[in-house]
Length: 185
Ligand SMILES: Cc1cc2nc3c(=O)[nH]c(=O)nc-3n(C[C@H](O)[C@H](O)[C@H](O)COP(=O)(O)O)c2cc1C
Figure 1 (cartoon, rainbow, N blue to C red):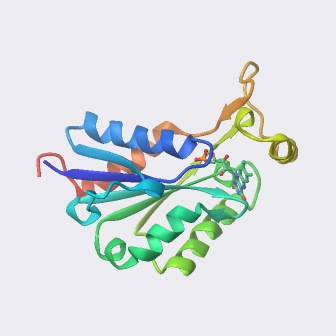
Figure 2: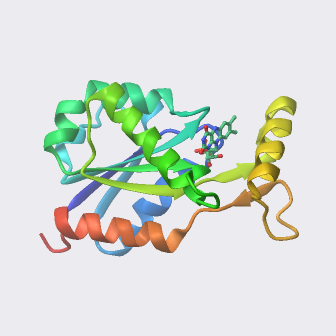
């Protein structure tokens, strides 16, 4: 059976939710899958022992999460030769404005420049606004950015608006795992 390791970093929890979704999706398709937080990796975890790795990392203030950057830099050689994909989580990935997709790609180019890892497969996942988890300043800043970019949710969404396209994420994971961790292998 093919083994899949999903590693994530997160600040407000959306990347964890995405990583857990990816792991559950892989398990539903009869793969062995494990999910772990990059910030606090168990000692017994050996990424090289897995058939495929999927890293999920959010963008905050123009950069991917520090723990993800450190992990990738430390493991760039492994990631480059091993089947490994990146799920980059950001609000630019929502793609409402011209230039948003380019900006989302630039975050990944910057990550590649910083770490030396050029991922063979990248999915740009739209993140979430989680106002209840922000302090006063962040809430003010994110409400302003959201209003400028026209990012609003359905009435009743309240303090949390999720933009993640789960179907697009599943399609990406299916394609990547089909190539590198086929069911029944
Ligand atoms: C303080 C802050 C800064 C952010 N900066 C960016 C940014 O520079 N570019 C972007 O596209 N999204 C940005 N976002 C949106 C996050 O990528 C999005 O909320 C994501 O879902 C966060 O993932 P997490 O919940 O796993 O931390 C920012 C969000 C916050 C709260």
